Amino acid sequence: DGDRDAAAAVAARDWRRLTCPVLTAHCRARGLATSGRKDLLVARLVRDAHFGIKEGPRGSTVAIRRETLQFANNLPTFIVQNDPQYRQMTDRIMDVFGGDDGDPFNS
Image 1 (spheres, one colour):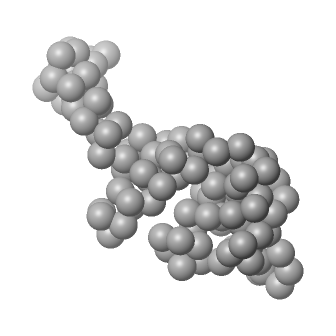
Image 2: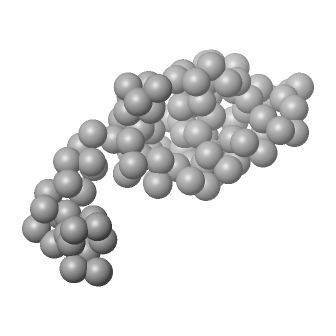
C-alpha cells in the first residue's frame, strides 16, 4: 500500500501541473466524469489509475462521488504525506528545526 500511495501521490503531483482542458480530455479518454474543478479531475484520475475506483459520467453511486470529492479536498495533504520528494524535504526540515517529538513548535 505504501508503494501504491507513493506512486499515486507522484501521479497526482504531476497531473496537477496540467490545465483543466487537458485533464478533462484525460478523464474523457478513461470514461470518467469530466465536470468539476481541477483537483476533482485529478482525484478521479488518481482513483481510477492507482486504486481501481472509477467515477463515470453516469451511474456512479453517491458514495463513490462523495469519496472522490473528499479525496479531492484532501489531495494536497495526500501528496505531501505520500510523495517521496515531499517526505525528503519534510525530513530535512525536521532534522534542522524539529524537537524530540517531531513537532518543531515544541522544541
